[in-house]
Structures are given as structure tokens and as C-alpha cells.
Length: 402
Image 1 (tube, rainbow, N blue to C red):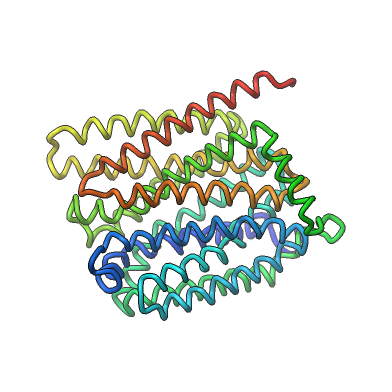
Image 2: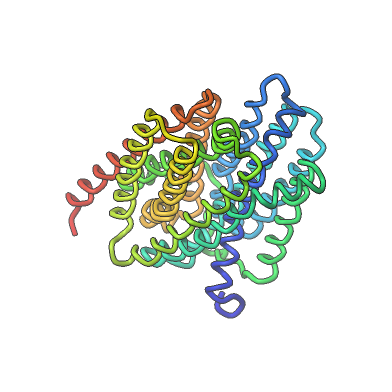
């Protein structure tokens, strides 16, 4: 790879692959009221399912993309997944009903799973240990610029072309990514290191993952962290609109929060070599428990509208910041013992965490009742459970031989 692509360019390309997810979700946020009013006027809250249907499809797709990339190489799987993503985006653009749009979003998510999962496998092909966590953190830091500007881009596209134009921007974004990868990145998985696509091999790889206690716990905690992030994403636009009457300024506040939270990945990249991945994740989840508890207590008080808005924006930042301090580390913890089956491991980790996180976020999002109570209680429960699991992981590691 050194002959064709520098480390900096490699990190930028991986960040853009990761950013396909954020762009596909966050740029849709300003469009939810318009889509709900046009395609689901009797229950505009159903428009939130546009987000979770995409996430569900992405989780389904991750079951297949890893093993396929282990068998056929990393780049061909990304090409096929990106083609499905582009076709589904075109179908979503042409949708005449919410049901048709949701189906298109599921297939768009399935296609998006390829760059998401295979990019992580490519990192594991080329790096390991804390250096791998550092690369992931730097890529995630760059990737956070996309959610910072995606709602504003979405709002701009809506103003110019209506909400359907957002799907055309998805097509353009994906085309740029795959052309860049095709021209600049050599295939990182050599033919002799590929694993045939055979069911016994897949089952054996899954068995290795689920019998490894650290890998198993890291997948559970990643599910909870993604659940918190997806729950906040599905409910954040209604909170700004209904509770705080700030729908017009929502894209700008969302961008500000994303930029502030983006420093988490930079901080993690600076600290992870010294402190280690598990300790950082544990501290981040413990801090989230305390912060969310304070938010619940303050929401019961008679705060002024300005102060209430400031509390929510601060808490939203804390949730995004927590994601930046945990997701890269949890992926690295789970992938580190699985280097010999990196593609399969990336698939299982991504599939389980994403599908179950979407299953958690969707019903909580539909509970929106004009208050932040369902959101806050859900995030408190998930952060407390994740904190307890990380403490248990620490006890397991202390019992293992050095």
C-alpha cells in the first residue's frame, strides 16, 4: 500500500467510507417533517422509521459482507455493496409512499454495510493493537465532520430541490468514494490469505468469537453504545422542533454539537496508547451515567426555556462525545484477537450491534410524547448496563494470565 497510498490518504479514504453511514442518516434529519407531512400525514412520527429502517438494513447486510470479503477480496465486495446502495437511493428518490421509501432505505442500508464493515477489516489487515485503535480514532475524528455539516447540506438540498434531492446527493457521494478507492487502494487481502465461503468455516469463526469472553462483552457494550446514539438521532429533531421550537436552527445546532463532540476521537487517539482501550470506555460510560442522571433531575425542575435548551444541547454533546470515546475502542477490543478472521469478525460485530441497537432505538423513538423522559430514561438504562459490563470485563482481564 505504501507504493500507492500514504497513511494520511488511507485514513481519509477510510473516514469517507465510514462517513457514508453518517451522511445517509444525518442529512435526512431536516427532511423528516416534510416527508412525514407528504407521505404519512396521519402520523408524522412514523417518519423516524426512515432512520431506523436504514440502520436495520445495514445490520442485516453486515452478516454477509465480512465473509464475502474474506472469500473474494475486500474491494469487489465494496463495489457490489455500493452499486446496491446507489440503486436503492434511486428507488427512494422515486418513492410515492412511505412504505416504498422504507423498503428502499432497508436496501440502501444493506448496500452501505459493505464500505462500513469491509473498511474495518481493511484496517485490521494492515494494523493491529493500539495502533489499530489509533487509526480508527483518527478516521472517526475526520468522519465526525460529516454529521456536523450533513443536516445543513440536507437543509440546503431541500431548499433547492425538495427532500428527494437528498437521495441524488447519496449517489454522488458513493460514486466519489468507490472511484477513489478503485484508483488508489491496492487490494489488501492477498489470494493466499482468503477463506473459502463455506458454512463450516463461518460457523467455526462465529464459535471462536462467542466463546471469547472479551469479544463477547465488547459486542454487548457496543450494542448499548450504538443504541444510545441511534436513540438520540431518532428523537433529536422532534425534541428541537416540538419541545424547544427550534426547527429552523436545528441544522446549525446539530453541526455545532457534532463538531464539539468530534474532539472525542482526537482525545481518544491521544490517550489510548497510554491508558488503554478498556479503561477509556469504562470511564466514558460512567460519566454518561452521571450526566444523564443530572439531566433527568433537571428536567423535573422548573427551568427557563433558555436554560432547558442549554441543558439538552450539553447532554446531546455528551452522548455524541461518549460515542467518539467508545466505538473505535470497542471495535479494536473485539477485533484484536480475531485478526485471522477479520472479515467475519467485522461482520458479526457490526451485524449484532447494529440490528439490536436499531431494535432498541425504534420503539423508544416512537414513545416520543413531547418530553425528553423516554429518551433520558432509555439512555440512562443503556449507559448503566454498559458501565457494569465494562467493569466485568476488567475483572475477567485481571484473572487472565499475563
